[in-house]
Amino acid sequence: MTATLPAEAGIPQDAGLDHTLALLKEGYRFIGNRCERYKTDIFTTRLMARSATCVTGEEAARMFYVPNRFTRQGALPPTALSLLQDFGSVATLDGETHRSRKRMFMSLMTPAAMQRLHDIAAERWRVRTAAWERVAQVVLHDEAERILCEAVCAWSGIRLSGDEAARRTHEFSAMIDGAGAVGPRFVRGAMLRRRTERWAQGLIADVRAGRLTPPAGCALAVIARHEDEPGELLSVDVAAVELINVLRPTVAVARFVAFAALALHQHPQYRDDLAADDDKSLQFVQEVRRFYPFFPMVGGRALEDFAWRGHHFGKGDWVLLDLYGTNHDARLWEQPNRFRPERFAGWDGNPNTLIPQGGGDFYNNHRCAGEWITIGLMQTLLRLLVSETRYSVPRQNMWIDLSRMPAIPASRVVLGDARRVAAS
Image (cartoon, rainbow, N blue to C red; front, side, top):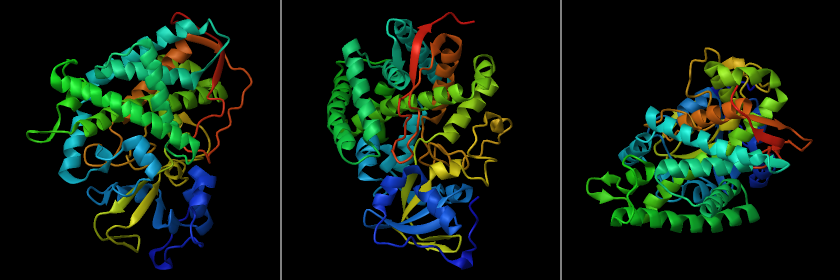
C-alpha cells in the first residue's frame, strides 16, 4: 500500500537527468514503482527533458479533475496527441469551447442511440462468428476490431464496403497500437492516420455540399454541422479529427474484449453469470476495466497557480495522473492485484477511483465521452461470446507486457474451433 506523505515531509525528486527511457522500460508501472519506493503519492521527475510531477490515488484524481485547473495543450506526448487526438480536437480545448464541443459528443450518447450501436455490434458479431467455423483459429482481438469498426461506422452514418471496412479497421488499429510507442509502430500509425484523415475530410465535405445525407442525429451529421460559435462551422480538418475521435476509440474497445475473454478463460466460474445476470455482467466488465491495462496515465498543464498536499503548482507545470496505479491502489481496492468482480456489488460509482478512461465529470472534464458506450459494448459482446459462441482455447502466449503501451495479450487471444450456436 502506498503511504500518504505528510505535507511537511516535502516532495521526493527522482534522481537523474532524465527518465524517459525508464518510462519506456517500466511502462504502466513507472509511477507506481516510484510511489512505492518513496512511500508517497506525489513525486517529481524529468521526462522528455521536461520537469513533471507525478501523482496517484483518489485524492490526486479529484485534484486533477477540478474544472478549469489543467489544460491538455502541451501535456500529451507527441505520439499520443498525433495518433489519438490531434490538434484542434476536444481533448486540446479548455473553458466554454471545450464544454460546447463536449456537449456535441455527449448528445450522441443518449440511451436509445447507444442501444442502436450495441444492436449493430451484436448483428456484426453474429455475421462474423458464423464464418469462423471455416477456419481452424481466429484472433479474437483482431476480429473484435473489425466488428467494432463496421458497427461504429454504420451507427455514425457511414457506409463501408467489405474491402473498405478491412482498410479502415487496419488504419484505426495502427493508430491505437502506435500511440504509446516510438519507432516503427508509431511511424506506421502516423502514415495510416493521414490516409484516414483524408477519407474523413471527404465525408465531411460531402455532407456539407449535399452529396451525402446521413441520418439526422448520427455522428457524421452532428459533427459536420456542429458550430462551436453561432454561424461558425468547424473547419473540415477539425471536423474530420472529431469524427475519427468517435470511430477510433470504439475500435479500441477490442482490447477490452480481448482482456475480458482472457479473464473469462482464467476465471471460468463467472461464465454462467454473464449470459443471464445483467448486474453480474456489469460487475465483471467493471473489474476488467479496473484490472487490465488500458491507458497508463494522463497529463495536464496547470492553467493557474494552486497548492495541493503542501506542494505549490505554478501555471504551466506538467502533471501526470497515474490511471493504472489508481485502479490498483490498495487504499481503494481490497486485494487490488486479484481479479474479483464481486467487489463492484454495491459500488458507489466514485468517479475518482475507477479511472481507466479518466476521472471527474463527463461534461466539465476530459473524461472519455464514450465510457458508457465502452461498458455497453463490452457487456454485449461478452454476452454473445458466452451464450452464442462455442470455442476452445489452444495453447498460446497470453502474457501481458506492461512495458508495452498500449498493452495487449501477446497472442491477442486465439480461439480454436470457434462457431456460432443458437442462444440457449
